[in-house]
Image (cartoon, rainbow, N blue to C red; front, side, top):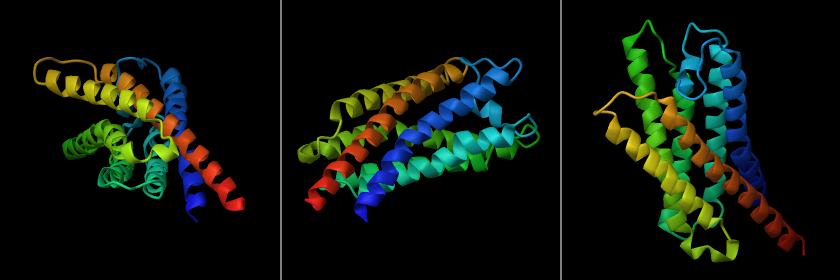
Length: 212
């Protein structure tokens, strides 16, 4: 059972960022006046805009579910430390809040909807920014599984730094949210792809060991 979970988690971790980037680039390039570098992702999912529901599904809801699957796979891989288990739970939580970001999209006609959307999206960013570092710490006793600790550390530090700078500058100056969302998502894409490839590699190695 654990082998099947890891395989599903590995594919899910790789598929999530690729689906998000594909959805963003296709929708962003075909939306008149949309700036790919500076405009928030959520603008493409705002109620009342063309293809908003499709973007919402492909960028938030489905990737959110895929992230939950990745977190479950991490729970069943390794897990000798509390930090590892906590990192797995954080991965699931990030997926839940990414899903919730799609469930509660921006709505120009509703102040409450915009507040809820902003709250769940910022919570998702905050959780995702620390998850790679928590797993990095938790993987210290998993050397036999050869996790990509260097990539986890680099992507985690980058995501945390980007999130920290964004939060620190928000009260001081106005800036386009997209300027921070793009590099933040790139950093997490590295984490997702590295984690997915590792889960598949571990699943394949353990499956071979079982067969022997």
